[in-house]
Length: 94
Image (cartoon, rainbow, N blue to C red; front, top):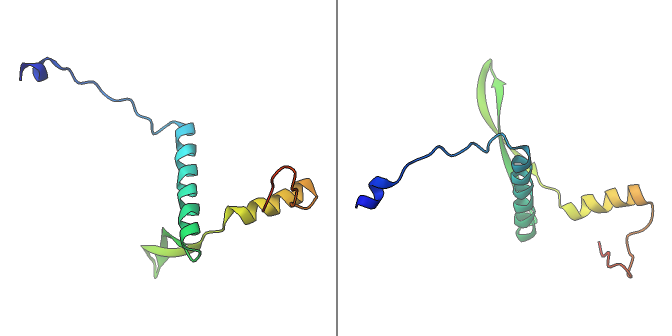
């Protein structure tokens, strides 16, 4: 395999410091949660945090409810626009 010996290796640049990439990854995680919430309305996210219990830091698992985005969008739209959401002409059906 003389072809493999002729190849050279390079260092791959780090993408961990890219703020746009981090925002996109976080948004994709949230979309995946919404997808799981559509499949199972009782879906609960588990979050692991460290907390001090009896003077010792321990990992604590906490369950957190996920809200559907359609309800959040409806509330925000009513507060900012100030009119009902049933606009048949433009296709809003919340």
